Every structure is written in structure tokens, then in C-alpha cells.
Length: 213
Image (cartoon, rainbow, N blue to C red; front, side):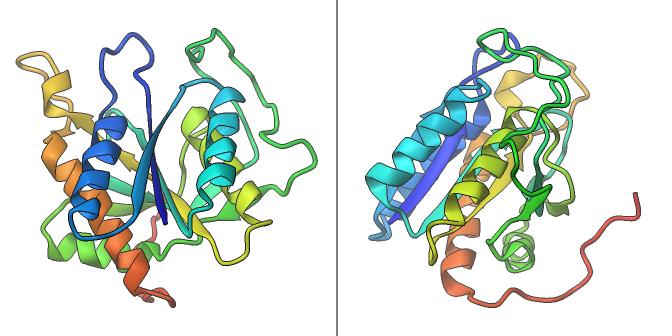
């Protein structure tokens, strides 16, 4: 069983491409005979983790891929590490704005994704989908969910999970905008590629995909 998640719109937006991509990717994978569910998460500290944890308990997936929007990025970002820090530059959808607070009090400083990020990068590149390995999922609700996911999965041996950021959808941007974007169909295809790569890979590939800054 595979669980995909995306977020509701936030910060005044009317859409969030991560949810559209997760929902569409679930349909693509279901058409291939896979058991896949998509769940929309609130863009709220605490509540997002609670909805995710309820879905984990109810669905008991073997693979979890969470997605969020990273406006300004031009590529699919395969997140490598989640950190135990909430530090909100803007309020969430409930008006919360934690600063320098732990996601899980007493939890470890960070968790690594248990998805094969390098194999996924190779698969995305082969499909000519712009992608990268990212070293930071930020400190907003996306990182909050990523950390909460990996913290929950420590008690679920055999279940793998991770997080992917997607760019703006091209339909979100006003005419003439220079912000990078990606068609919604390509984002959905990208999430499906990541899932297929994870299902096919037990030991990740090893090649340089790091960052100098």
C-alpha cells in the first residue's frame, strides 16, 4: 500500500500544486494496478502531522511520499534530510507562527529520508523531468511534516518514506511572471516516477548530487 500526500493552499494562494500532483499521481499508479491512496494535509503546524499520523495508522502503507510546494524552485526537489526545527517566516493557515521550536520535543536533530533519492533523481533525469537532490526542506510546515513522518516511521520497520518539493504550477502565475514553474501533469508524472524508483530500489545508487552551498 502506497500513501501520497499534498497540502492545501496557503499564504493566500488558491491552489497548491503538491495536492494536485499527489492526487493525479495516485490515479496514474492505480491505473498500473498499485494500491495507492492520496491524502490532503492542512498547512498547519501540528494538525498536518496529526492528519498524516492518522493516515499512517489507518492505511498502514509500506511506502509514503509527501509533497509540498516550494515556490521559486525550478526543479522537483528530492529532500534528503528533515530537521527538528519549526521556524516560520509567515503564519500557517491557523495563524500559528512558531519560532525556533522543535517539531518533536526531545527528538533527534534530524532524520534522513529512507527513499532512494539518488535512484529517483536518475529516474527523473531519464524521463527528462528537471530534478535535484535538496539538502534542506526549509523550516515551515513542509519540513514539519517530513520530520513528523520520519519520526513516526521509526516505529514502523519496513515502511519507507520521504518528501518531495514541487515548483509553482504554471497556472498559478500571473501573465508575465518570471518565477519558475512546471506543468501540473509533469509534477504528477514526477511523483509517480519517484514511487516507481522506490519500489524498484532497495539499495540507493551512489553518485555525486550534493551542493557546495
